[in-house]
Image (cartoon, rainbow, N blue to C red; front, side, top):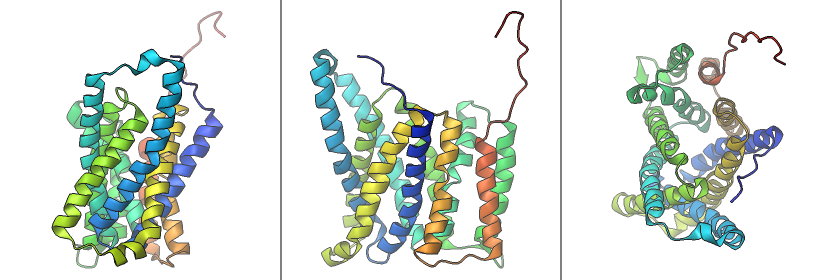
Length: 312
């Protein structure tokens, strides 16, 4: 089978902006949904919708590729097992991260939650130390900025941390681990299939937790249904697909920087739709955290290599 053609930089950039927009505005949907249903109920609904949304695309693509190259679709037990294992691990971490985020957003604002969540961009290179990948010196500068920003954004008088902000900070840690798990498997499995299995296992864990720890009522679910549909279709389905398209045509550093604009879209949508207000101290904290993301991801120009005689 021929290699898949990479999209242009313009298309890739636009796709990642779409992903960042829907991830950011979903914080508003989560805030609205949290008024009617508990965290596991919301998570179960959005994850099964995301699974069902991606499934037809996978089946259609498989049918098209099977017709073009029937030999590429011979049964491979090892490949199926790898998809299941990757989906199970990534899905559990996504479930843990999303559930703590949904719990936390019920006690904080969408604006603050969106900025705190983007700490995963700084945490991923730090966690890479444990797998012997030494981060660049600029990452430690980013950590200093992000910790200062978190203090201004979250710590109240008397050095106390609100429950909602604490839960969202835990969510950022779990998302960092989930990103590392996906990166570990991404070169060996199909991206859309991994996503679909990931959402499916997230649905399984969310549904079990829903019946164990909550008392879901159909009336409440129907009230929250618009928010659940928005999160399931546009955040889980569309945004992830846009991420896959976008990352094919851009370097990881540039792609991560664009995707982290979800924090800006989250703050703006919280301000416009939910009429959330932020103090100048909190806004400055958000600015420092966003600056930390830029410092962590931006590539500094290196020394130009001298050209050899005759080199163009």
